[in-house]
Length: 285
Image (cartoon, rainbow, N blue to C red; front, top):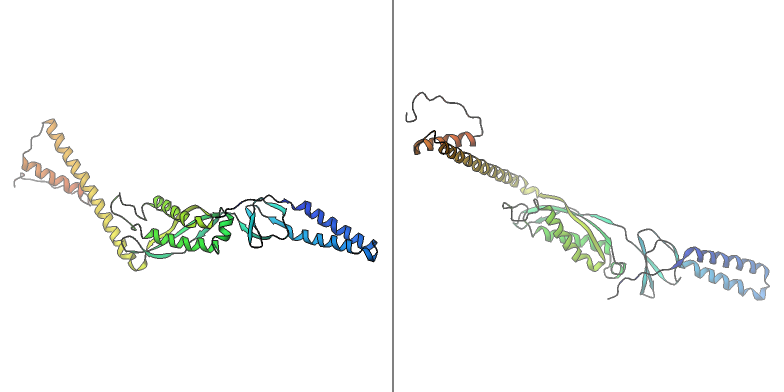
């Protein structure tokens, strides 16, 4: 398979000077030469006309692909005013960095939940030959392959995961973006495109299940918070009992310990401030 190769054309300013000089000489000879030698300025005019189509302007971070009779003859990447074979056809290909702001797509995640997802892809053309001749329209190819990659990526991860070890679209943005960039690079390599960055720009549950999944997330957050509170309360109670036994200043039987544990857990786990209660009797009354 052919690959891109860069050509170094001569300066266009030099050939422009030659073109002007030929035209000036042709005009002068046309005026001064007799009619039987009029062919000389005609030939000079034809040469000047052939020089003109070879002039080409290449912008910074731009390129020009050269073709002759359907065959690839190289790419001009050096910016400036250049001159090439006037019979070459020239196809401009920009090398600037581009940004694709993908549309919102409705897909199913790994758990089968419908989600809305969109991505931003930063890319540029790396190989002008592949971009020009391996695909029909490399800009459209990037758009379609990016949409396909985003759809495939969404099906590999759940929107949210309960365990820390499971990757999810919402919590593991860096890992998901890296996976998206890797897949896009594999898909777009044949088009001579380099993916510089790929990130999710939008992620949400589909409207038809958004309210239900929000209640689910709130319930999961409440449960997780309760678990942390209970774990901390149990640790504080264990510490209190251990400290009492360490000092040996107060000896509690099992029933008193159970009452103490119950009271401490109520105080520590309650959502409201504890209300003092004055016991006028004994523990057993």
